Image (tube, rainbow, N blue to C red; front, side):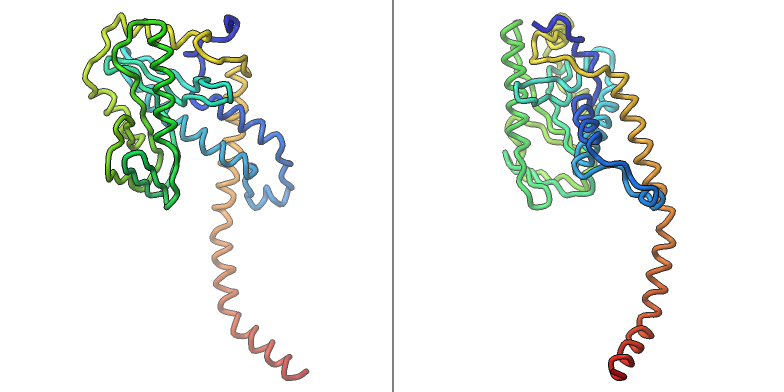
Length: 269
């Protein structure tokens, strides 16, 4: 039983990702004064992956927060014994939706049926989305008379372009910016009583493989401090860009003289 676990609605967007991020970051050695001076990021290679994922989930979380009151939104739902989770889960008049968030800033995303290709790499987004929705459908139907199946969604953050060659049969793939209007235009399939019942089932920790986690406010505070440090490093790097450009120009201008001098030294010897 998970009766001592906080309700699922108390979890915030990217909570699980931030937990992993902070753990990874705790293993990263502190930057030297010189590294800080030149604006090297405080994030380690592994931390960078989780940091970007957290930012993407938080962005989608903010979009979902703008849904009307008849919609209930959940985040970072622990949905598997192996640590897998559902990024976002929403209940509203249009039904129940599992939402998988993926960040592909500036990249081209191509969708052809069950295949998603990002810059030439095939990724298993459709299968994961289908599994998430099927799992939630089963959990709800074991506990209530739910007729419509849970609808899986993949929300892409920051893509340069999403090209749809063939729509997946079950999964909706879209730009994250289009997520809220798409949800609001779904035809009504759940009445208020069903929505409340479904939301209460999802809200219960006993429905999920939930374990105690760090205090949410502590996570938010530590992430905010890390984010502030990342932004400061980025500003510092931007500050040095003009100097780097000037150095390249001076170096390029002086290159012929350097080559001539080297040739002269070679001849002399």
